[in-house]
Image 1: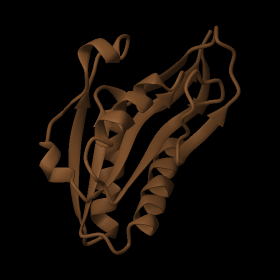
Image 2 (image 1 turned 120 degrees about the horizontal axis):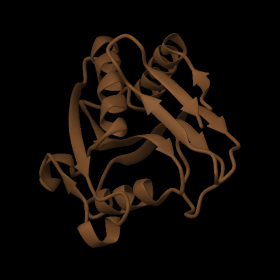
Image 3 (image 1 turned 60 degrees about the vertical axis):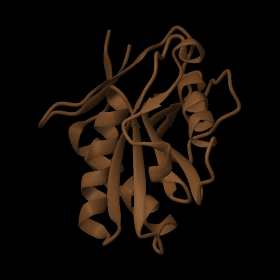
Length: 165
């Protein structure tokens, strides 16, 4: 059974709020790297970057972060931009759902290979049971869920939604 947790309008509100939080933390920056984890994270990152482009004069660079989410250690992490492009920049690593924390922590480890001005994380849904010591700096909603429950995020043109199964 699906329980709708967030409607399209609620998600749009959370996208705007997170974008403004990112802007406030980066007012002085000339460029902000928005790094979306491939899949729902990248779709969420693109929505945030669209709002950022409307509210700041900073250059917003969207970076795709690729990894095997089931085995990130084996596959490694690849990005659509070269490491030199984010040296001494402000980076925001984005995913749709923070489950165990493994995807975000491997993504963070990848970006920490070079000196950054700052590194923050953002998620639409933060589940409150993690295996790894990582937190989302910006989050749309926090849920206390059981390990058996599943969060499903759907990004469609006019009907974004989040379900708890």
